[in-house]
Length: 165
Image (cartoon, rainbow, N blue to C red; front, side, top):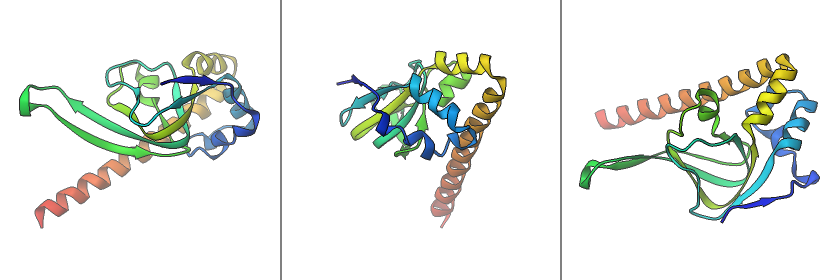
């Protein structure tokens, strides 16, 4: 069950420790936090459904999520694959934010999960007011995506080496 929670002032340091937002100024983080919604998810709940269009970027405050791709097909033709597990300080929903396309995978709570949802409209508004924020914000997202691509490449290469031996 999704419950919107008031955002406690004492529980906002997760953006400071987020691996994604290291390029942002402290006051920019404060503005993002002010506009974010705190949301709780129970174990097994789908936070973002594959193909759906999330309305923002999510920061994991507490807990772990599984990022899982489901391929359609009848019978044994369909399959699913877990891409990753993300914990506190990580973000998700950034790909849909950037390319305005549906989510490429399901994001599912593994245990109880608390997230901050930073709405797309808030990010767009701040970006239009301060274009230097936009540069730092998008650079932060690019670094996150680059890091994830490198990690995926390393896992693929490791898997290929294992299958060859």
